[in-house]
Amino acid sequence: MKRAGGLALALVAAALATAAEAGAWPRSKGRGQVILKFEDMRAVEGFDPSGELAPLPAERRERILGAFVEYGLTDRVTLVLKGDWQSGEDAFVDYEGRGPLEVGVNWHAWGDDRTSVSLYGGVADGGEGRNAGYAAPGQGDRDWEVRASVGRSFAAPGGETGAFTGGFVELQAARRMREGLPDETRVDATLGAHFGEDWMALAQAYAGEAEGNGPRWLSLEASVVRRLGAWSVQVGWREAVYGRETPRSAGPVIGLWRRF
Image (cartoon, rainbow, N blue to C red; front, side, top):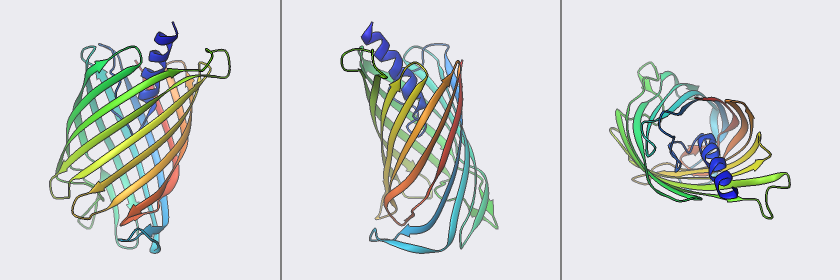
């Protein structure tokens, strides 16, 4: 029973890892979820080419409203759809419009009662964020991504008698090939802890680097999740803690999703 409970927890928790989407645990056949996520990031400093902090010419602000859908085609194959609307401004450019639209498939390669390994492949059409001909940052004409994910659930020491009832860890590594922009390597890590049946805490790290001595980033995020039946609400804070040629952005993250 403990193993089954740990796996069920991990299935839910992996779905809540908003940036680490298309994760290690698949959706069951005929089951799915829709996630809406809003981010409001601001920065007055940035990391220069040597990684040192320096003031920006003006405040940088970026707002993203994203949608993420996954649906189990089989017990091992999950269809994944992603899209967002982006807007932002800094000292040099204002932009607003649709971000990349992505479709992909997540394949459950291997798993046991506690561990799961999946492989993902997807393709994204470049976004339409624009103002006076500028595209939103980070958008290529077309992107391809391959991603490997491994996750492991664990039960609370001494059984599920205290406030902490279990959790999971997950690591993802991805390669994103982009038209018109340097390719990227990304690594995402998530640690989740469940408290009772309806509360969860998440700690996440998102890191990456573009080829050719391009931008590099590391952001940390902490959030709390409240489950309300088939719905869940997530409230958290994300902040860039290290980088190169990237803003030191920070701001709230709010997620709302519906399982079906």
